[in-house]
Length: 439
Image 1 (cartoon, rainbow, N blue to C red):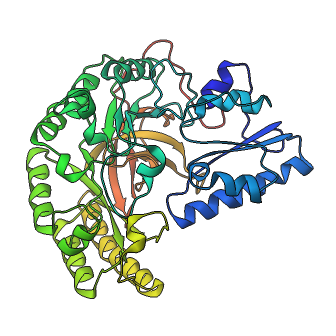
Image 2 (cartoon, rainbow, N blue to C red):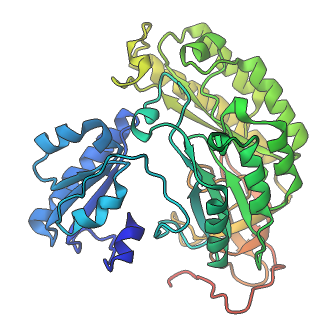
C-alpha cells in the first residue's frame, strides 16, 4: 500500500498529527491483536479532531472479519479495505469511490511498487499467500484464502533488486513457506528457490533465511540445500505448536513429540551449528495436565535455541472454538509461565557455551535501551523475534549500521549476548554510503 501511494505522488509520514489521511493496518488473528487494532483505530480517530487528518481508513484482517461492524460502530472510519483489495488504497486515500472488485486473491509481484518499512540493511519478501492446512486453532485461511505461490522468477528478480540497493539480509515469509511452488507442480520448490537466491552475485556477504516452516514439509533436500550454501543462514523456524499426540490430533496437525525429536536430530546432523526456533500453544481445548507434562518433557529433550509460547485464544470463527474441554485462563497463564521458565534455563545454558567464540554479526545500530551500547544480530538471531547481540566495545573502526563484522562474545544473559566488535575484514564497495547514528 505504501508503494502504491508513493508511486502516485503521495508523501508518507509516521507522524499522525501531520497526516491528511490516516491508514491503520490491522490484525485479527487473536484477541490481543484485535484489541490493539481497535485501540489504534480509536487513537487515530482523535487526529481527525485535533490534527490535519480528513480521512481515516482501516485495512487488513480486521476488515475481513468485521467489515460491517466497523462501518456500523465506528463512524469515524471513512473507508475499509480488505486483504484482497490493496490496489484500492490510492482511490480511497484520495476520497474517490472504490472500483468494483471481484475480491480476487491478492498476491504482489516484483513489479508491484514497494516501500521498505524496515531498516535499509534487511528486508522481508513474501513468497506465498494463504494456507491450505486445516489447523483448528487458526483463522488465517478464512481471511487470506487458499495457498498460492509467487512466480519463481518474480522472487528472484525482487531479491536481486533489493541486494543491489544495499540490503544485506532477506527473510522469506508466507503463511507456509515450505509449500512454495507446490501449486505450480514443483517438488522441493523452496529448496530450489533458496539455491537460486544464494547464487545471486552481491558485492558483499549476504544472509538469506526463511520463516514459518511446516514440520512435515521439511525435506532432506531442503536441509541439504541450507547446509551447502554459506549465504543461507543456519536457522530453522518451525512452529510445532505442541508435543502431545492427542493435542496435535485435536489441532489437526498430527505427529507427536517422538516424531519431532527424530526430525530435530536429522536437522542438527545435516546442518552443523544450526539454530532451531519453534513456538508452542498452551491451553488448547482438551489439554490435560498429562499433555502439558509431555510438552514440558519434550522441550527439555529438544533443547531449542529459541522458543515462543502462546496462550490459546478461543476465536469464535475457528474450528477449535467448538471443541470441549476448555482450559481456564489461570491454568493457561501458569502453564505458559512454567514452560517459559524451562526454556529460559535452556537458553541461558546454551548461550553460556558461546563465551569466547568469534561469530559474524550484522550491525543494527545504537541500542534502543542505552546510548552506551550498539546492537547487532548473529545469523542465528532473526530480526524482531529473537534476542540480540549487544556491542559494548570495539577494535578498529567504530561500528556502522548495516555492516557485517565479527564479534568476540564476552558475556551472555538469558536471551542476549554481549561482546567486542573485531576489526573490519569486509571491504566496503565503492560508492556505498554507510548509515551512522544520528543520520
